[in-house]
Length: 359
Image 1: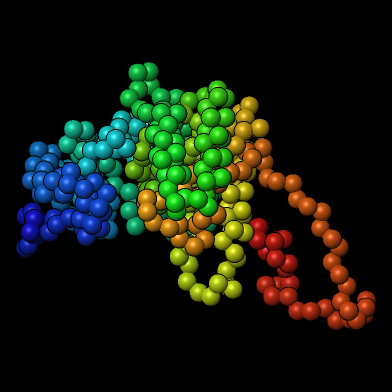
Image 2: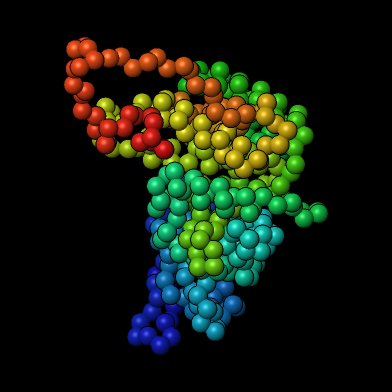
Protein backbone atom coordinates (compact mmCIF):
# COMPACT_ATOMS: atom_id res chain seq x y z
CA UNK A 1 0.00 0.00 0.00
CA UNK A 2 1.47 3.36 -1.03
CA UNK A 3 1.33 6.18 1.48
CA UNK A 4 3.04 9.42 2.34
CA UNK A 5 3.56 11.20 5.66
CA UNK A 6 1.17 14.05 6.43
CA UNK A 7 3.12 16.98 7.92
CA UNK A 8 1.35 18.51 10.86
CA UNK A 9 -1.05 15.57 11.10
CA UNK A 10 -1.15 12.31 13.02
CA UNK A 11 -1.32 9.88 10.14
CA UNK A 12 -0.37 9.25 6.54
CA UNK A 13 -2.07 9.87 3.21
CA UNK A 14 -3.03 6.80 1.20
CA UNK A 15 -1.70 7.04 -2.35
CA UNK A 16 -3.20 3.89 -3.78
CA UNK A 17 -4.36 4.25 -7.41
CA UNK A 18 -8.15 4.48 -7.81
CA UNK A 19 -10.05 1.36 -8.83
CA UNK A 20 -11.12 2.89 -12.14
CA UNK A 21 -7.52 3.53 -13.14
CA UNK A 22 -6.53 -0.03 -12.22
CA UNK A 23 -9.38 -1.45 -14.33
CA UNK A 24 -9.07 0.72 -17.41
CA UNK A 25 -5.30 0.94 -17.80
CA UNK A 26 -4.99 -2.82 -18.22
CA UNK A 27 -8.08 -3.16 -20.38
CA UNK A 28 -7.11 -0.31 -22.70
CA UNK A 29 -3.33 -0.55 -22.81
CA UNK A 30 -2.69 -4.25 -22.12
CA UNK A 31 0.73 -5.33 -20.85
CA UNK A 32 2.18 -1.85 -21.33
CA UNK A 33 -0.54 -0.43 -19.10
CA UNK A 34 0.05 -3.03 -16.40
CA UNK A 35 3.79 -2.32 -16.44
CA UNK A 36 3.12 1.40 -16.11
CA UNK A 37 0.78 0.74 -13.19
CA UNK A 38 3.37 -1.41 -11.42
CA UNK A 39 5.93 1.42 -11.64
CA UNK A 40 3.44 4.12 -10.63
CA UNK A 41 4.13 4.12 -6.83
CA UNK A 42 7.85 4.77 -7.29
CA UNK A 43 7.22 7.37 -9.98
CA UNK A 44 4.69 9.14 -7.77
CA UNK A 45 6.97 9.15 -4.73
CA UNK A 46 9.88 10.46 -6.80
CA UNK A 47 7.83 13.28 -8.29
CA UNK A 48 6.47 14.37 -4.93
CA UNK A 49 10.01 14.52 -3.56
CA UNK A 50 11.60 16.31 -6.53
CA UNK A 51 8.89 18.93 -6.73
CA UNK A 52 8.58 19.27 -2.94
CA UNK A 53 4.86 18.63 -2.91
CA UNK A 54 2.72 17.69 0.08
CA UNK A 55 -0.07 15.25 -0.88
CA UNK A 56 -3.55 15.79 0.54
CA UNK A 57 -5.51 12.98 -1.08
CA UNK A 58 -5.97 11.00 -4.26
CA UNK A 59 -8.82 12.39 -6.33
CA UNK A 60 -11.43 9.74 -7.09
CA UNK A 61 -12.70 8.35 -9.35
CA UNK A 62 -9.86 10.13 -11.15
CA UNK A 63 -8.68 9.63 -14.69
CA UNK A 64 -8.83 6.51 -16.81
CA UNK A 65 -5.15 6.48 -17.78
CA UNK A 66 -3.82 8.95 -15.22
CA UNK A 67 -3.65 9.35 -11.46
CA UNK A 68 -4.75 12.66 -9.93
CA UNK A 69 -3.38 13.73 -6.55
CA UNK A 70 -4.40 16.91 -4.74
CA UNK A 71 -1.24 18.49 -3.39
CA UNK A 72 0.18 21.69 -1.90
CA UNK A 73 3.41 23.37 -2.87
CA UNK A 74 6.07 24.53 -0.41
CA UNK A 75 4.31 27.89 0.04
CA UNK A 76 0.96 26.20 0.67
CA UNK A 77 -0.57 26.85 -2.76
CA UNK A 78 -3.15 24.19 -3.67
CA UNK A 79 -2.39 22.36 -6.90
CA UNK A 80 -2.99 19.08 -8.72
CA UNK A 81 -0.37 16.51 -9.63
CA UNK A 82 -1.33 14.50 -12.71
CA UNK A 83 0.67 11.38 -13.51
CA UNK A 84 -0.44 9.74 -16.72
CA UNK A 85 0.66 7.06 -19.10
CA UNK A 86 2.24 8.67 -22.15
CA UNK A 87 0.37 7.63 -25.31
CA UNK A 88 -0.02 9.03 -28.81
CA UNK A 89 -3.09 10.96 -27.63
CA UNK A 90 -1.58 12.35 -24.40
CA UNK A 91 2.07 13.01 -25.27
CA UNK A 92 1.44 16.64 -26.25
CA UNK A 93 -1.12 17.58 -23.58
CA UNK A 94 1.47 19.65 -21.73
CA UNK A 95 2.37 21.54 -24.94
CA UNK A 96 -1.25 22.53 -25.56
CA UNK A 97 -1.74 23.70 -21.97
CA UNK A 98 1.50 25.70 -22.14
CA UNK A 99 0.37 27.34 -25.40
CA UNK A 100 -3.01 28.32 -23.96
CA UNK A 101 -1.28 29.56 -20.78
CA UNK A 102 -4.50 29.52 -18.79
CA UNK A 103 -6.72 31.11 -21.46
CA UNK A 104 -9.83 28.94 -21.39
CA UNK A 105 -7.94 25.97 -19.92
CA UNK A 106 -6.34 24.88 -16.68
CA UNK A 107 -2.93 26.49 -16.17
CA UNK A 108 0.19 24.32 -16.39
CA UNK A 109 2.61 25.06 -13.54
CA UNK A 110 5.33 22.48 -14.21
CA UNK A 111 5.85 19.41 -16.37
CA UNK A 112 8.10 16.44 -17.02
CA UNK A 113 6.68 15.23 -20.36
CA UNK A 114 8.75 12.05 -20.57
CA UNK A 115 7.38 10.95 -17.19
CA UNK A 116 3.83 11.99 -17.98
CA UNK A 117 3.93 14.32 -14.95
CA UNK A 118 2.20 17.69 -14.80
CA UNK A 119 1.58 20.10 -11.96
CA UNK A 120 -1.66 21.99 -12.61
CA UNK A 121 -3.60 24.74 -10.90
CA UNK A 122 -6.38 23.31 -8.77
CA UNK A 123 -9.92 23.66 -10.07
CA UNK A 124 -13.19 22.50 -8.56
CA UNK A 125 -12.89 18.90 -9.66
CA UNK A 126 -16.29 17.88 -8.36
CA UNK A 127 -18.12 20.56 -10.40
CA UNK A 128 -18.17 20.10 -14.18
CA UNK A 129 -20.58 21.29 -16.83
CA UNK A 130 -22.42 18.00 -16.33
CA UNK A 131 -23.81 19.56 -13.15
CA UNK A 132 -25.80 22.07 -15.23
CA UNK A 133 -28.96 21.50 -17.24
CA UNK A 134 -27.96 20.55 -20.76
CA UNK A 135 -29.07 23.78 -22.53
CA UNK A 136 -27.13 25.94 -20.05
CA UNK A 137 -24.14 23.59 -20.21
CA UNK A 138 -24.04 23.91 -24.00
CA UNK A 139 -23.97 27.72 -23.80
CA UNK A 140 -21.13 27.70 -21.27
CA UNK A 141 -19.24 25.06 -23.26
CA UNK A 142 -19.33 27.04 -26.49
CA UNK A 143 -18.20 30.22 -24.71
CA UNK A 144 -15.18 28.42 -23.24
CA UNK A 145 -14.40 26.67 -26.51
CA UNK A 146 -13.99 29.93 -28.41
CA UNK A 147 -11.08 30.90 -26.16
CA UNK A 148 -9.21 27.70 -27.01
CA UNK A 149 -9.34 28.16 -30.78
CA UNK A 150 -6.05 29.97 -31.36
CA UNK A 151 -3.36 29.61 -33.98
CA UNK A 152 -0.75 26.98 -33.08
CA UNK A 153 2.85 28.05 -32.66
CA UNK A 154 5.21 27.71 -35.59
CA UNK A 155 6.83 24.27 -35.61
CA UNK A 156 4.21 22.86 -33.25
CA UNK A 157 4.22 19.12 -32.47
CA UNK A 158 0.48 18.49 -32.81
CA UNK A 159 -1.06 15.95 -35.17
CA UNK A 160 -3.44 17.28 -37.82
CA UNK A 161 -7.08 16.25 -37.99
CA UNK A 162 -6.38 14.94 -41.50
CA UNK A 163 -3.67 12.56 -40.28
CA UNK A 164 -5.59 11.50 -37.20
CA UNK A 165 -8.80 10.75 -39.10
CA UNK A 166 -6.81 8.92 -41.80
CA UNK A 167 -5.99 6.26 -39.19
CA UNK A 168 -9.63 6.10 -38.09
CA UNK A 169 -10.75 5.81 -41.70
CA UNK A 170 -8.46 2.82 -42.11
CA UNK A 171 -10.05 1.12 -39.11
CA UNK A 172 -13.52 1.84 -40.49
CA UNK A 173 -12.64 0.26 -43.84
CA UNK A 174 -11.45 -2.86 -42.06
CA UNK A 175 -14.46 -3.10 -39.77
CA UNK A 176 -17.05 -2.52 -42.48
CA UNK A 177 -16.24 -5.97 -43.84
CA UNK A 178 -17.11 -7.70 -40.56
CA UNK A 179 -20.47 -9.54 -40.46
CA UNK A 180 -21.78 -7.46 -37.55
CA UNK A 181 -21.19 -4.23 -39.54
CA UNK A 182 -23.60 -5.05 -42.37
CA UNK A 183 -26.39 -2.78 -41.13
CA UNK A 184 -24.13 0.27 -40.75
CA UNK A 185 -22.12 -0.05 -43.98
CA UNK A 186 -24.07 2.73 -45.71
CA UNK A 187 -23.23 5.03 -42.79
CA UNK A 188 -19.58 4.04 -42.90
CA UNK A 189 -19.41 4.67 -46.62
CA UNK A 190 -21.06 8.07 -46.23
CA UNK A 191 -18.63 8.97 -43.44
CA UNK A 192 -15.59 8.05 -45.54
CA UNK A 193 -16.91 10.03 -48.49
CA UNK A 194 -17.67 13.07 -46.33
CA UNK A 195 -14.19 12.96 -44.83
CA UNK A 196 -12.72 13.27 -48.32
CA UNK A 197 -15.04 16.18 -49.11
CA UNK A 198 -14.14 18.04 -45.93
CA UNK A 199 -10.41 17.60 -46.39
CA UNK A 200 -10.68 18.90 -49.96
CA UNK A 201 -11.95 22.26 -48.66
CA UNK A 202 -9.21 24.55 -47.29
CA UNK A 203 -9.90 25.89 -43.79
CA UNK A 204 -8.06 27.87 -41.15
CA UNK A 205 -6.14 25.51 -38.86
CA UNK A 206 -6.46 26.21 -35.14
CA UNK A 207 -5.39 24.39 -32.01
CA UNK A 208 -8.19 22.02 -31.00
CA UNK A 209 -9.00 20.50 -27.63
CA UNK A 210 -9.63 17.13 -29.28
CA UNK A 211 -11.82 15.63 -26.52
CA UNK A 212 -14.19 18.44 -25.70
CA UNK A 213 -17.24 17.48 -23.67
CA UNK A 214 -19.06 18.68 -20.55
CA UNK A 215 -17.07 16.44 -18.21
CA UNK A 216 -13.82 18.08 -19.36
CA UNK A 217 -14.90 21.60 -18.37
CA UNK A 218 -14.59 22.38 -14.64
CA UNK A 219 -15.57 25.29 -12.44
CA UNK A 220 -12.71 27.55 -11.37
CA UNK A 221 -11.97 30.59 -9.22
CA UNK A 222 -10.33 32.90 -11.78
CA UNK A 223 -12.80 32.02 -14.53
CA UNK A 224 -16.27 30.48 -14.40
CA UNK A 225 -15.23 27.43 -16.43
CA UNK A 226 -11.92 26.03 -17.68
CA UNK A 227 -11.16 23.08 -19.93
CA UNK A 228 -9.00 20.15 -18.82
CA UNK A 229 -7.56 16.95 -20.28
CA UNK A 230 -7.01 17.95 -23.94
CA UNK A 231 -6.05 15.47 -26.64
CA UNK A 232 -4.74 18.26 -28.87
CA UNK A 233 -4.97 18.30 -32.63
CA UNK A 234 -4.69 21.01 -35.27
CA UNK A 235 -7.41 21.52 -37.84
CA UNK A 236 -11.01 22.58 -38.44
CA UNK A 237 -13.02 24.01 -35.54
CA UNK A 238 -15.91 21.74 -36.50
CA UNK A 239 -13.99 18.79 -35.04
CA UNK A 240 -14.39 20.11 -31.48
CA UNK A 241 -18.02 20.99 -32.14
CA UNK A 242 -18.72 17.43 -33.28
CA UNK A 243 -17.44 16.07 -29.96
CA UNK A 244 -19.63 18.56 -28.12
CA UNK A 245 -22.75 17.66 -30.11
CA UNK A 246 -22.48 13.97 -29.26
CA UNK A 247 -21.94 14.56 -25.53
CA UNK A 248 -24.18 12.77 -23.03
CA UNK A 249 -25.28 10.17 -25.57
CA UNK A 250 -24.25 7.40 -23.18
CA UNK A 251 -26.51 8.94 -20.55
CA UNK A 252 -29.37 8.96 -23.05
CA UNK A 253 -28.89 5.29 -23.92
CA UNK A 254 -28.71 4.29 -20.25
CA UNK A 255 -31.62 6.40 -19.01
CA UNK A 256 -33.85 4.40 -16.64
CA UNK A 257 -37.60 4.22 -16.78
CA UNK A 258 -40.23 2.89 -19.19
CA UNK A 259 -39.49 3.42 -22.86
CA UNK A 260 -42.82 5.17 -23.25
CA UNK A 261 -41.67 7.96 -20.94
CA UNK A 262 -38.76 8.90 -23.18
CA UNK A 263 -38.59 10.16 -26.77
CA UNK A 264 -37.51 7.53 -29.30
CA UNK A 265 -33.70 7.45 -29.60
CA UNK A 266 -33.86 8.46 -33.26
CA UNK A 267 -35.89 11.55 -32.45
CA UNK A 268 -33.53 12.48 -29.63
CA UNK A 269 -30.58 11.98 -31.96
CA UNK A 270 -32.07 14.37 -34.50
CA UNK A 271 -32.80 16.94 -31.78
CA UNK A 272 -29.22 16.78 -30.49
CA UNK A 273 -27.51 16.89 -33.87
CA UNK A 274 -29.41 20.02 -34.88
CA UNK A 275 -27.47 21.83 -32.16
CA UNK A 276 -24.16 21.36 -33.92
CA UNK A 277 -24.99 23.48 -36.98
CA UNK A 278 -26.68 26.09 -34.81
CA UNK A 279 -23.64 26.30 -32.57
CA UNK A 280 -21.40 26.48 -35.65
CA UNK A 281 -23.40 29.36 -37.07
CA UNK A 282 -23.55 31.13 -33.70
CA UNK A 283 -19.78 30.85 -33.26
CA UNK A 284 -19.08 31.68 -36.91
CA UNK A 285 -16.80 28.66 -36.79
CA UNK A 286 -17.22 27.53 -40.37
CA UNK A 287 -16.50 30.59 -42.54
CA UNK A 288 -16.87 29.81 -46.22
CA UNK A 289 -18.18 26.30 -45.46
CA UNK A 290 -21.92 26.79 -45.38
CA UNK A 291 -22.26 23.98 -47.88
CA UNK A 292 -20.04 21.72 -45.81
CA UNK A 293 -20.98 19.19 -43.18
CA UNK A 294 -20.45 18.61 -39.49
CA UNK A 295 -19.54 14.98 -38.92
CA UNK A 296 -19.04 12.97 -35.72
CA UNK A 297 -18.18 9.29 -35.74
CA UNK A 298 -19.01 7.26 -32.64
CA UNK A 299 -16.44 4.53 -32.09
CA UNK A 300 -17.18 1.26 -30.30
CA UNK A 301 -15.13 -1.83 -29.44
CA UNK A 302 -14.82 -4.36 -32.25
CA UNK A 303 -16.95 -7.45 -31.85
CA UNK A 304 -19.63 -5.82 -29.71
CA UNK A 305 -23.05 -4.84 -30.88
CA UNK A 306 -24.02 -1.21 -30.67
CA UNK A 307 -26.25 -0.59 -27.61
CA UNK A 308 -29.95 0.05 -28.36
CA UNK A 309 -30.57 3.70 -29.10
CA UNK A 310 -26.98 4.43 -30.11
CA UNK A 311 -27.07 2.60 -33.45
CA UNK A 312 -28.73 5.62 -35.04
CA UNK A 313 -25.87 7.72 -33.69
CA UNK A 314 -23.04 5.70 -35.24
CA UNK A 315 -22.57 8.55 -37.69
CA UNK A 316 -24.02 12.00 -37.08
CA UNK A 317 -24.30 14.02 -40.25
CA UNK A 318 -26.03 17.38 -40.51
CA UNK A 319 -25.65 20.28 -42.86
CA UNK A 320 -23.72 23.08 -41.20
CA UNK A 321 -25.66 25.74 -43.10
CA UNK A 322 -28.12 25.94 -40.22
CA UNK A 323 -31.20 24.14 -38.97
CA UNK A 324 -33.20 22.13 -41.45
CA UNK A 325 -36.23 23.97 -42.85
CA UNK A 326 -39.38 23.29 -40.93
CA UNK A 327 -42.30 21.65 -42.62
CA UNK A 328 -45.43 23.80 -42.71
CA UNK A 329 -47.68 22.67 -39.90
CA UNK A 330 -51.34 22.04 -40.37
CA UNK A 331 -53.72 24.29 -38.40
CA UNK A 332 -54.84 22.70 -35.13
CA UNK A 333 -58.05 20.74 -35.35
CA UNK A 334 -61.05 22.11 -33.51
CA UNK A 335 -62.52 20.01 -30.71
CA UNK A 336 -65.24 17.69 -31.95
CA UNK A 337 -67.92 19.62 -30.16
CA UNK A 338 -67.46 22.75 -32.28
CA UNK A 339 -66.31 26.23 -31.33
CA UNK A 340 -68.10 26.22 -27.99
CA UNK A 341 -66.71 22.87 -26.81
CA UNK A 342 -64.43 23.11 -23.75
CA UNK A 343 -60.69 22.83 -24.33
CA UNK A 344 -58.82 19.80 -23.12
CA UNK A 345 -56.48 20.41 -20.22
CA UNK A 346 -52.81 20.66 -21.22
CA UNK A 347 -50.07 19.97 -18.69
CA UNK A 348 -47.08 22.25 -18.09
CA UNK A 349 -49.01 25.47 -17.78
CA UNK A 350 -50.93 25.06 -21.03
CA UNK A 351 -47.89 25.14 -23.30
CA UNK A 352 -47.71 22.98 -26.36
CA UNK A 353 -44.83 20.55 -26.64
CA UNK A 354 -42.09 21.89 -28.87
CA UNK A 355 -43.02 25.56 -28.50
CA UNK A 356 -42.25 27.95 -25.66
CA UNK A 357 -42.07 25.17 -23.10
CA UNK A 358 -38.97 23.72 -24.73
CA UNK A 359 -36.98 26.91 -25.23
